Length: 450
RNA sequence: GUGAGUGUAGCUCAGUUGGUUAGAGCAUCCGGUUGUGGUCCGGAGGGUCGUGGGUUCGAGUCCCAUCACUCACCCCA
Image 1 (cartoon, rainbow, N blue to C red):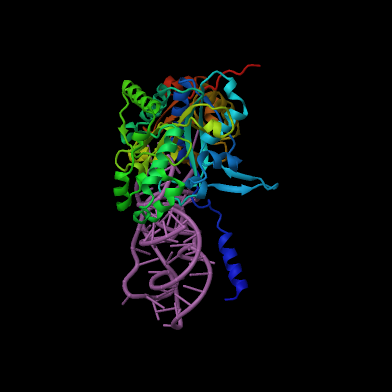
Image 2 (cartoon, rainbow, N blue to C red):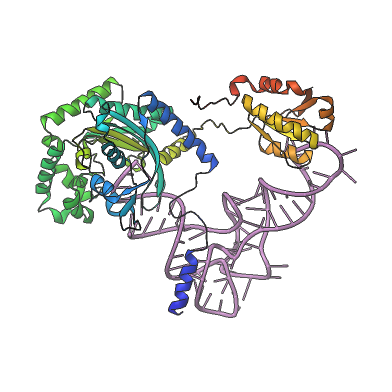
């Protein structure tokens, strides 16, 4: 094969199949039922708690993420979708949202607002990662942040809210909350120095990854699963010995408040997070069976971040959870969510006169909250009923020339296969009776003001 | 980024040690005569067997590459 044909062949194999790129998926109607439900729960709980929703752009200048998440983290080193715009500016599809929210907080001078500022989001994110169960290149997260106040009660509050949302979704029992403190930035600096001192001279016993970690991200040395590394980690200096008095007391208070809120948790001194901005409290929701493999969310305090990103020193704490992972857990537990897409009534008609009357009738039915589909095409009665069957409606209305002439309409009970003739003017009342006032789709977005 | 497994119709899967024109169930569409669905009966459409090479008289089946999916690692939501 010549070079040219090879080039042509590879070019050919790349272009024709129109399908989603690797690691990304369509969210089809049946999946949206879960997405919708989760969003509803999140919005409800956070609105109740006084949080306001925020959406930041899907892409930011690369530095927003690189500086906040940390240059040496896996996310920044290998998982970001980074590209140049036409002017050569480096932009990145957001891999998470805390950085964007903090950037927005600074940019819009939110420190001028009543503190703390409480924000939540439900958005898609992007990471260039090898796809796997519960890990996609585009994925949805919801999260919430409290920025502008330092108090252990807020940390407890965040964990409590996260747990509350899990309760609403019926999955709280599937998770064990892992809790730890990684101290203040100052504590951590001292600890990392001690850790490095301990490991220097022992490099030969470390696995390849850990040799790298020693310089780039020493905290990660502690949770390596390699046998030799584990043994070394056991004997390594403990974070707790390097915590300042304030940090220790802070952590103690967080635990006290959690006890007060009756939140069960497991203290996990090895828990560190893959993003550099965290300080003091860190926590993750681990699958009770699979552990970290199947974590659905995590968070913690990040008191240094606002300052790192050029704002005034401002304390903050937050949480984020993966929506696809939540759905996977719900499905595994066979948890069903209510679907509001079911149709109440199918309207079948024959003849032009009947069709005319149906147009208005359908509109009136929908106004009252009856979810209605009409077959306004030319199909035969047989075809229309078949269609009604596909939509799985409990009732079908049948309007033909005879009924138009007599001012009546037929209500067919699809399950029983029985039908009754009612006065055309009374058909809506009859249907509401059958379906039940409480089942009508009466949702209103609220009154607009002119 | 590393390792392993899988890839046949829209879906779930058969397809013998390589051998005629690649099958089934479900789904879809059309019939079974007037304005009545589901069940039943009859019929039809739908595949360059993931893609590209190679071996062979002959490849869905064997080999190589590639892509995708799944799983594990790394890491994370």
